[in-house]
Image (cartoon, rainbow, N blue to C red; front, top):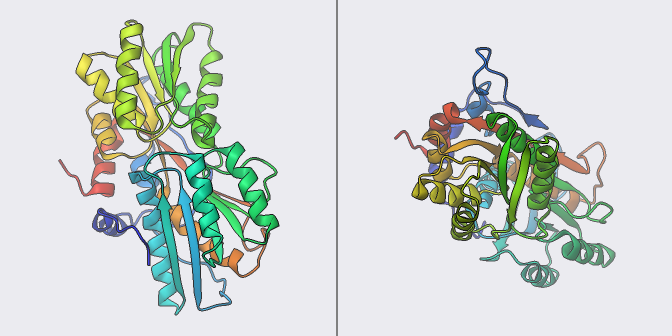
Length: 362
């Protein structure tokens, strides 16, 4: 059984019933389309396509009737709760086939590579079939994973952050296009600002591949325009409160700030709180599906959000872990990297997304 019980499981079950239009797994990205009237970008059923809750296990026949996994991720946070919902659904479907899948699902209260290393060392003694990691720091954790594989442990990565290229981990399930996500968000911001203005970037956790890659993508996109300027780049450690404090300081230091690119799920909320409190008209773009962030999107405080399909990440992680446990390597049964989607959603998508993900019709 899972360690973490999820407060919004009922909302997810409701979503399964509602999202009958969504079926099958997809990869890559869903992007916005241009409004033919010349206005802001609009999306093509983005709220309905952003998260796919309709999954069935593939025909692979597991070799055992019980599997035990260990998964550790960056930080205790609602984003990974959503990943866990997909894990629970795969677990349920395996149980329907007479196969018990048990797993630990643990993380630190604050992002820490040292903490993650300690958890991995402890997991080595747990007799798990597979150990899965959402990498907190690519340089530090990739070395640890190489050592674990050399020692005979079956190791995979999952969620939002893979190990360094060349790491001997067996496979990765999650977002393979974080750099492009950052570029897409920055491009949406630049377009909204008429390709000129001063912009700040809130990154997240130093060394976290997904946060660093999105920031890199955003910086690259912004620097392509001569009239755009990056005036601040700050790390908030995936903390709403820290993001709020940093944004307040950035606004104070840059009263003519035009936009903020937010590279994780926490910082759009912190930035939006600061912008609302100060009455600023700064344009915010950011990541993911935090409930408060979706309300800010609905109210026009946040311009757009890049929503990752966490449910699919969780579901596919369990399927791949079972195959790895049976001794399979990437190939016909599963790829080395299972790519999950990111969908850019806008204000007109917010109400439906809130209802689908949280049962919030307000």
